[in-house]
Image (tube, rainbow, N blue to C red):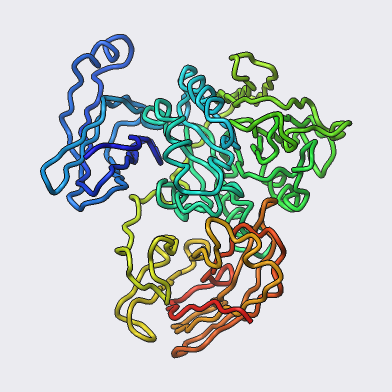
Length: 536
């Protein structure tokens, strides 16, 4: 047995962290760890003989391992190593490393941001090495970690970031090339519901959106975003990350995402980080699409994580966007340093040169302690490969079931097997359950071009207000494209067939997904079974 990927850090909070790694064959999962006695020189000297006095593990055999450590001291350094044992008695163990729990409310911290790391591995490795050299506390990716296929995650993304991510937790948004990549859900432990989420670190609130899924007014993501920004309106700093840029000086500008800008402005978002355009660009602060030095939102495009800058997507327009402050087609990453009254962003190229920077300041005031944002649950347990859930076999593609709203139910079914149960009492936003469908190889592409489909399911409801729905959503290179949704089903009803017809598909669709959801604000319980997608 050997460790073929990791360990790498996920989902850090003040008192918890998830550690993940992969082995070449199924084995047990064990993390051995211990707190450093103090910071400073003694902490480094102590690494010569680290003490692993605490253990946390899982005896179930797995190849993708995830262990959640809880009850940790805030803003403290821990030494750790991971072990896995096979059924034949073989064992694999990682070299020692360390992690640090999340910063206190008033403590300064640093984070790294970049996107589009697919392309040239040595460039991504250089950016990751520099990020490690700057000792970033966390990394927040802006999407497109690798190009489409899950196999490239181990060899390219994790291979390039190995030394960084065993010390530095990784968060990220979904890019268009991540959207057909099942590894986004299998290899990462993001907060619920995972395809979008938020988290707090120090005095800052981070909102991670998904521009490959429906973000229009009235959608689940729009309702969640508005609720999230309202809940953390008093955060000292507010950062939003998603892949497709509303503003950009090349042909990767996605003007449809500007529908979100009024929400950012209304709730005082400070900085929006995007990628997709494989360039660097910083915009002057904007409100309502106009320059606003006093309270506008600053937009960054950071798509230089590893892309070949000689290719067409890295070309700038002959004349920059009217509100562009600085643009350059160069491989780079962003280093953002956050303190209570100051936020400094530096753009750093692969030669370790700072080629652009920005400083934002705020008047001194009392800090507000931020509660947890999205639910940060242990890595989800998945049904065994081959299990049939709501009409689909769970291998290799699986349902993504946000907890605690969704669960696999073997007791209430329409035709045996397992259904999917949804429950919401109104205390949480509505999230969709989703599953990728209609793929050919790794992307849909021409396999669905010009074709029409019917999506149907059997649905049972109990005291549902608002209404539950079945829909098909699709996205492409430029993000979310469209969605066809059934009429909502409400009240208390026995198994009822619900269906929706999907109009002819566009060419070059990357990803189609079935969504089981509800109208935002809905409550009650529903079961979904026998989901089918058929060409018509």
